[in-house]
Image 1 (cartoon, helix red, strand yellow):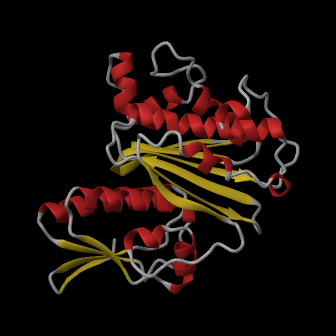
Image 2 (cartoon, rainbow, N blue to C red):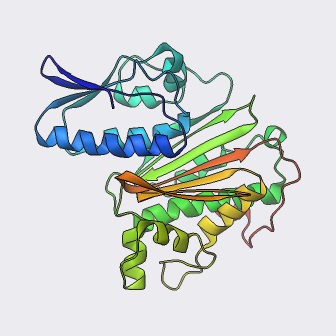
Image 3 (cartoon, one colour):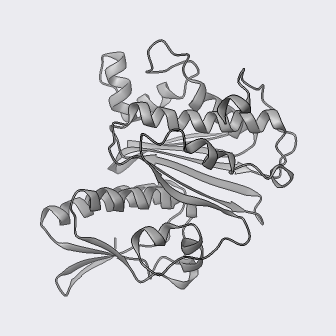
Length: 300
C-alpha cells in the first residue's frame, strides 16, 4: 500500500481496484489503515491519481469505508482523481458524495448509480433495483427470470436491513459493460458480519468461511419463523446458471462461486461487515430458473 506523510497529512494512494480477491483484500487493509491513522488523530487524504481503473461496482465498498470513518469523526478527504476514471465516477455519483464539482449525466445509460440507503429506506430500494434489469432487450432476460433476480436482490437488501446492525445503512453500486455483455453489482453493509449472525443463531462459534457456506445453503436462515435461504441460495443458482459469478466477503473470508468452481480464501485483514458482488452475463438468452411464487407487482 503506497502512502506518504506530507504537510501534516497521511496520503494514501489508491491503486487499481477489481472485483476479485486482491481488490477485497486491499480494501479490507485500507479500512484497517484508516482506523489506525484516525486513532492517531492524523488527517487522511485518499488520493485517486494512481487509480487508473476501478470496477465501478466496487465503489460500493470504497464508499462505505470512507463514509464510515467520516461518520466516526475521521479527518478524511478524497483528492486528485485519475482522468481514466474521473468521467465514470462523476456519472455514477461517487465523486459527488466526496468531492465538489463532479456531476456528469449518464447519457449512455450504463450506470447503476452509487447510492447509500438508510435502514429505514426499504420502501425506496425496489425502484432502484428495478432499473438494474429494466432493458430486457439488452439483457435478454425473460420476465420470470427478471422477476426472480429482482426478488433475490431485494432479499439481500432485506437481510442487510434486518441483520447488519449498521447505523450507516447499505451501500450499492453497479455498471453495465455492453462490450463485455456483463453487469457488475455490489451491495455492502458495515454491520456485524455473517459470522456473528450465524454463530448467534447456531449457538456456537464457527469460522467466517463456514458461516458463509452455511448462509448460502438453501433453506438456511437466521430469520425466525420466516421461510429463509431464498435470497442467497436462489441468487447463486441464478448467477451460476447464467455462467456468472457471486463473490461474498465477510470477516477474513472471501468466497467466489461460479458454475464450475467454488473458491474459498482467507484474507489477512478482516472485512468488517458483508459485501456481495454479482457478475451477470447479459447476452445469455437461454437462462431459466423456476420463478418463485411472488409477482413483480407484489414487489413494486
